[in-house]
Image (cartoon, rainbow, N blue to C red):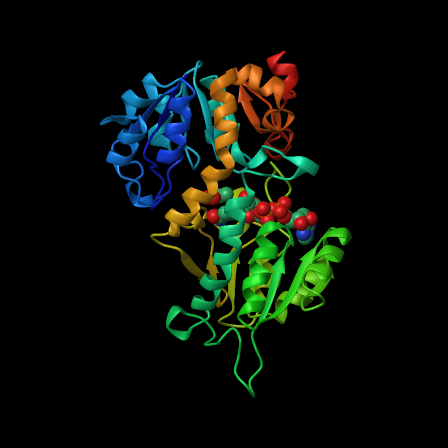
Length: 371
Ligand SMILES: NC(=O)C1=CN([C@@H]2O[C@H](COP(=O)(O)OP(=O)(O)OC[C@H]3O[C@@H](n4cnc5c(N)ncnc54)[C@H](O)[C@@H]3O)[C@@H](O)[C@H]2O)C=CC1
Ligand SMILES: CC(=O)C(=O)O
């Protein structure tokens, strides 16, 4: 198969979908790999390393897309990339279609086989291609939040861990999955007072065990969320219902009652955000203020640390890339239930229930579509 890797176009998206190590493995398996000029440069991978691993460097993005049977990306295509869509193209990347009806329509219209990293499943319904970036973003959310709590960044002027004689800041984490757990680790490490809110009591039990009682756990309800965030200086949004737009469990009225200068980091913004006042921001303009509360809602947080993030992401994606290249997309989807869950669009039909429900559209299961 011919596999192409364009340079990312999203604002300050510095990651790349394949490393030189991945190129070498694909070439050893008999595939051809096309890399756009400097696609890996911001992740510290040079053209020379890709060429040494067996890739061909392409100067022009449009030609790379046209010559590739499967395109690997990191983030959802931006409008400038839509012209490259065509029916015999397989696109393997984060898609986040639930809050993006325009992109969904275009993938359906152009009959692209769109496989989304974020809905590929593993054992026990885990999300193996979302997990590494959730680990990065969860850890980052606390360092970002701590920085925005500083006075010079518009925050309340708090040190997360406090000092002897002055209490630490209160951190409330909405959603105790991968982002939430990693945020809690960092926040506890910095000495903060941490509360985690989740709908799943089993998850809260696990968190109580993992952190040995050092975090407070709270069952998710409008009442509990409202109470917890009113008393917190830093709120992390980390709620997910796979494939769907995130439920907005923190309302605008609740944000109004938060302390002036407190900070919200809505990591779930890539799925539309779990906080009513959140709107997508970029690394160029990451924050804004609503009712005195600083909001940071960057949709591609791991792009701030591209060397770590590219390695972590491609460690997880590569086995699926190899399966798609070796078997071809339809046999690979039939072979792997987890990959089948990743199929979002196929020959003009929607294949992801969560996206369909969020957009009020019809859908069919992947196995029905590829039968
Ligand atoms: N902005 C960015 O750059 C990045 C964003 N993300 C996003 O972060 C979000 C969270 O991802 P993960 O932690 O991996 O998901 P996860 O599935 O591991 O955790 C989500 C948690 O939300 C909980 N939940 C669901 N409904 C809830 C409700 N009503 N109230 C409270 N909790 C509820 C679930 O029980 C689960 O524990 C996703 O939208 C993901 O795409 C991930 C990485 C980077
Ligand atoms: C998961 C996601 O949104 C990201 O890594 O950018």
